Length: 305
Ligand SMILES: NC(=O)c1ccc[n+]([C@@H]2O[C@H](COP(=O)([O-])OP(=O)(O)OC[C@H]3O[C@@H](n4cnc5c(N)ncnc54)[C@H](OP(=O)(O)O)[C@@H]3O)[C@@H](O)[C@H]2O)c1
Image 1: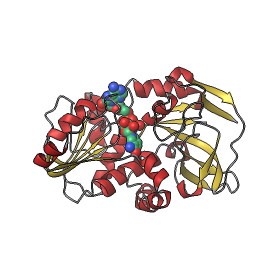
Image 2: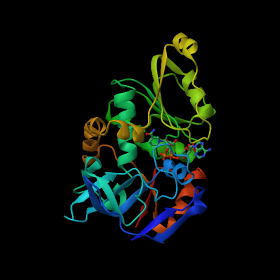
Image 3: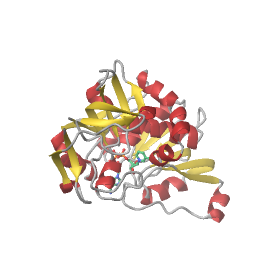
Image 4: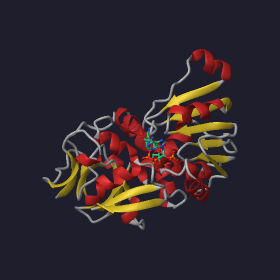
């Protein structure tokens, strides 16, 4: 089969389209013909050897996909630890979901951010109806899914943070009541979902209300969030919680799979549907990574083998 291989650790330039052996499904795995594979910021980290939840290069990147089960032709969505940037992928049955009626050319971009947004808001932050939510990089893949998920969960005011007027307009179209630049001012909120880190985290923390929760998912700015110590967080009455869906799946796979079932149902009903920003052929993986790292993208990116 054809696949994108990061033969050594590096930037987008290390991604090459190659002929490689077909994957052999192991115990509990199913072979899927990939129609679309979502491109995530984490894939750029995996290719550079800096992603905690994937094996180091050499690897075939890609954490999510949509396609058909080879044995039955059944349409499916799936999550993997690596290997989705390929014509075929072996997927653990626990992370394979029915995709009847879904557009398989797009749906490979949906599961990772939808399920992460659900877990971040519902399980980690324990969002309650009416609570306000601030989402950094609110026009990005995770951000746009989080804005939609906050709406689906009955949040009160939802505010996106994004770097350009186009991105702020995009975030509003996903359901944000308002969208602001990183220079602020940010409104006071109950819950923050942050995948940017650095100064964005510091500003968001500063406006989190007492009894508020800040969920830290990543650091796309390149600077890890500087989490204050006990004294300051107690004085502020704010909780800072870190979450990695990849690690949760590894640590407690059965529990994680059971907890995401309602989010899969929201996807199935179309109540949360991460917007597609741009599609690339499989050979365009390096271009897709450059686009993401260059901060150009809105919504999700997919590769179509
Ligand atoms: N913990 C988990 O389980 C989990 C799961 C999924 C994703 N994540 C994390 O969530 C974050 C977003 O992931 P994604 O795949 O959805 O990507 P994305 O949000 O579509 O793209 C990254 C966004 O980060 C913002 N950004 C700020 N500073 C940046 C910089 N120096 N370089 C590039 N981008 C910068 C940009 O939006 P603006 O221009 O608007 O700032 C950019 O569009 C990442 O940190 C990722 O690792 C974590």
